[in-house]
Image 1 (cartoon, helix red, strand yellow):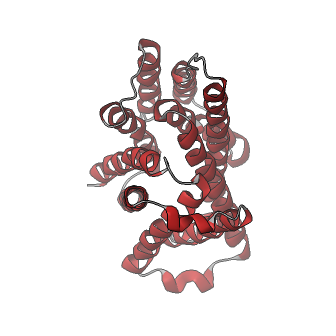
Image 2 (tube, rainbow, N blue to C red; image 1 turned 90 degrees about the horizontal axis):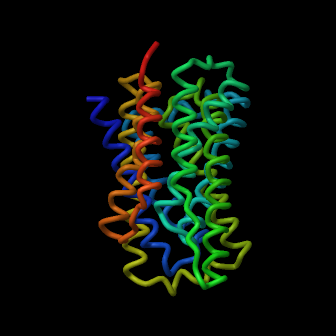
Length: 290
């Protein structure tokens, strides 16, 4: 059952990118992130009350709280950069860069967590890194403004990957002494606060009244799919090995690319398709146990 939940988590995560892309078209990306995080927060605390771990808050140590907060801040920064990138660029180019956080996470885990670097991990990192490079295609256009937007989207996507990798490290340390669902809910509170602070700093809160029904629908749906992904992900972690579940979750890129082709009409070149194959192969190679 945990294996099914892991693949469902990847499916929901893949759909989230498409729903968010549509919902972001006419909305400031920071405001959109703040609004959808409200939905995610409800899901997070729903998980806490389902497993009955709310009473454990009083037992959390200062160290754990610090790393949970750092994890929340890095998660918020990653989301803000990711959805800014989605608003400016193509899903097919933004998502692979974001998913390259797997490589960064493995490197940081080697440095800070003392995890072993095996031959299989090296092969996986090379395949994922090469695949990501192949999928980053800068379209040549006659519109200098479009070129700048495309370049900016790649920069935001790279920052998203860096912050996502830091999230994994901070989260790994912070989640050790706390029930995982409760830890996730606490991090989400930090993400929500961070998102709304940025919204008010930019004075974008007044734009809420201008959001059309379609954008509202897709932003809320993207929040639900994110929550669904988290429910399945942590449901899988409860009964299955994290070393297998985490790489499966990264396969959400396949779902994202498929839906971006069907719904957003974003096509992959032969070079980009080869990159996708390498990313999938690299991710699957991480499932090999030694």
